[in-house]
Image 1 (cartoon, helix red, strand yellow):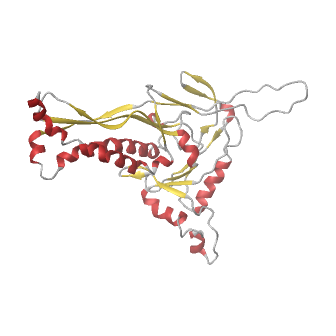
Image 2: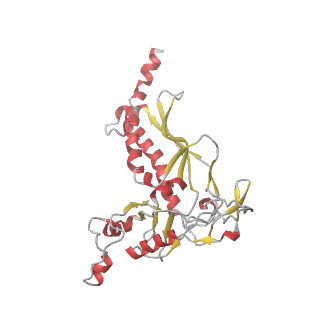
Length: 321
């Protein structure tokens, strides 16, 4: 037994850095998106979200006859987490002669891969908001950004919502280039949204989401120098007060994922967290596997998660040509 401990003790030298930096890495990259995405931990195979409905406005009462009320429903979205994993094998000799310290960094980098896998999938959810193919559809059968979202459903058939055609449709997709008027137009559009049962959709579209290319423009519009509308300053000497001054913005993109260069959105920061989720069965972690071969240490980054959105009302997207 003693010999066994001596022969494999070198493996323990690879582990300390894993736990020291993993949480920091994960929190560092998720902190911005955590403002608009909520996390859920669920041990079921499927996570079910259902948009809230209701019975609408009350009818007048004549003192004798009550008017029947029919329920209008939201749409059901099912998120199915999937496993993501890999393996990294470290040879004993490599670890012993590793002058650059790469072997000891393997655990840290494995943890980074696990956490960034979640991060990239969240970016893809936003990047594919304009994609009407099956993996990226919402519970109403439409892309997250669409001009014809049904307002309500009337039934649930095996987890699939049945559209209530009589309730009409709404659009959360525009094609305007990012500007102060475009943002205020989107905010006005949101104020006309209704809930599934026809009541006003009460919201505060207070957060701007932009591509990396649009971050300089977002700083110009929302930052400390944005008290006056930049467009007004360029057009004339008339200084117009900027109605979105102080609005928060979040960059939703990195590498090849997330919004493309001209895409942006505006949302209600509180409401969107209720409908845009990352669902975990197992959060990002690094497993340490003992092998029969004492000359190899195996590190396994692992996570079980899914992403999805349950409603289109808390966000308006813009996809300029």
